[in-house]
Length: 438
Ligand code: NAP
Ligand code: HSE
Image (tube, rainbow, N blue to C red; front, side, top):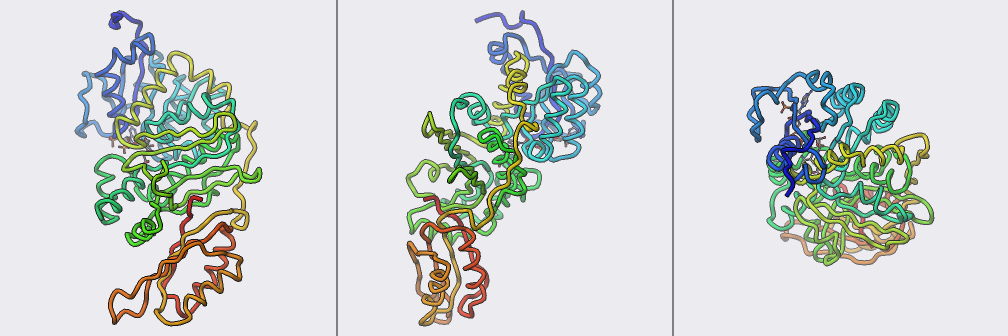
């Protein structure tokens, strides 16, 4: 082995020492020989910027490294690359701009920031001749950004079907396998460091939609406003739905999909019934998976931890190495991401969004109810693939759950039918609607 102590040093810094920042500090401090072997130089952790100097930290830093003064980074010309690992939009955006303007290349895991301000930040970085690297922003430890933007670049990507939110997948797995209550599973995901500072972003599909907008930009060359991606989270998924899905031969997963259908880019995030035994259905816990189809390569499947300290830190440090050796700057300049070179694109309206759907209603237990409901579906040309109706839970109970799985139709047709069904006197309360992966 080479004597890494003798190698040239490149000074780096971290801003934000939470879950991910702590993992990055550990990798840089405890495994310096490993990073040096790949970078051909030592990545020397010069400064770590935090808000609160007194907070206990999960890593022991050498004296003088911890500071609450960002200027100790921006004013130090010897620091070349900075892992900016604070979440949310502000002050993350302003700090990112300050770092770029002071001549630093920046590595980030903040997908919310890129999905919201990617165009501004990437333009500014290009003007300044700097680089932003963001492998950790999508699917944690899975190197999906590099794979889509570099390794699969000979392909027209045809589809991406992905589990991109580790927290949601963890919650669904705990609910399904251990009968854990939704709120308890959320709390456990927070304890494990998987969830966003506000876990609503995880469970309402926002985080997955932001990641999908980034992947779709790389894969399809379209600039997509993540807010326009139709999205539904897992809050409405009930233990009963997990049971009915299983009875039908499926598991429920929060899928993020970008797919060319008749030359139109379909995009959505939705809890989706996925056939048991297929690779996406078997993704458990905080794991993520991305199934990509390219016209030359065929299907490739990526699977790995999508959230958590060390998997995410793995992606950040790999980016840091790519930045300091000069690989990331070449890719960054070549791709011109979020630039005017890429067209803006909006997902098609519901009537142009094909799919199969799972519907659950609570209906009166009397003759003619099934005919009423299926009549409305029929009026909207929606054909039924399966039905589950069970006996009332007790003789006093005069309503029963009714589960219907449709054949291929459009989301628009289902939504119009549901608008009518909702007003039928035999239907109590609302309904549950999810997609089914064909
Ligand atoms: P976190 O645990 O909440 O840590 C955030 C850190 O940012 C905290 O240490 C906080 O400092 C620091 N901070 C906030 N404002 C600051 C400021 N003005 N100056 C300096 N430091 C500041 O968050 P995280 O889970 O590590 O996530 C960081 C980013 O990575 C987020 O964008 C998240 O979406 C993304 N990400 C997270 C994961 C994951 O599994 N956790 C995976 C992939 C991507 P104090 O400690 O002093 O309060
Ligand atoms: N909160 C995110 C998740 C972290 O659970 O997937 C990884 O981006």
